[in-house]
Image (cartoon, rainbow, N blue to C red):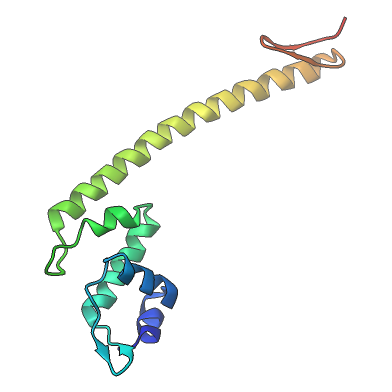
Length: 131
């Protein structure tokens, strides 16, 4: 099938499909006349690549999932998913700390505004009123 059909079936642009091919994520695609002739296997790989990208997995990481024969290395795929899950859990923890810090600053500003202290001069210890 032609690249336009692969694009229609997968939602990937022709440019993205060519990039996947250039990066070695698709096995070399044979040509029929001047046109690339994609297989159902290629469609499946493009769908997998798009799903992985949607999960925040990089193209470099995806490239390590394919064996020389074009088959998916299932243990490597499972390991990659677990690594991504751990990265997301760590990021969630970091974001929770940022959220707590934001709430603390917001609370301090709310308290200062409600106290009617006037102008604020920022000091390392927080907001103070001018003398």
